[in-house]
Length: 158
Image (tube, rainbow, N blue to C red; front, side, top):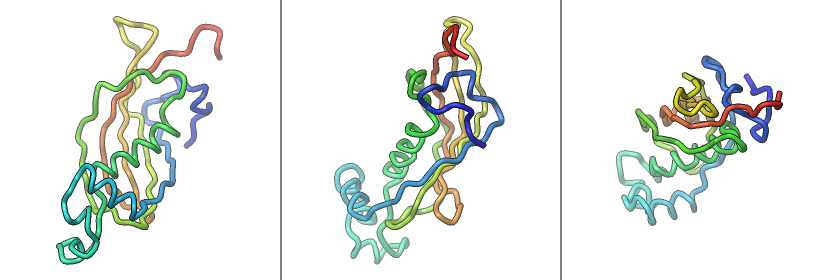
């Protein structure tokens, strides 16, 4: 399924509970896996291919946080509104399900779980979304539930 409007003209009302949207792709690059691991998650299976080959993973794998950052790129570029998104109060149930390796190509499948207008600030609302990051074989490698505050469509904008 696809949104009826592009992210540049997407508002709270465009997020319909039950709708499923798929976006991708983004490639996992070895140099980025190494750089991210060395800077933010310095465990050998993220930072050294030769040592990683001796681990239970049998080779280099991306940090789960790197995978989450790749997911966020796709989520922000394609799913979130570019005009109505405010902030996020957080995420729930972040799970890393399978190793992500250099050469993998990731996409996201996002299900709108809830979209409701705020009672205290009626110009906006909250959207709760279930995100699955999929590898090139369609296997989920990460799941998370995200919440985002969005503005409602301004009067006169159909």
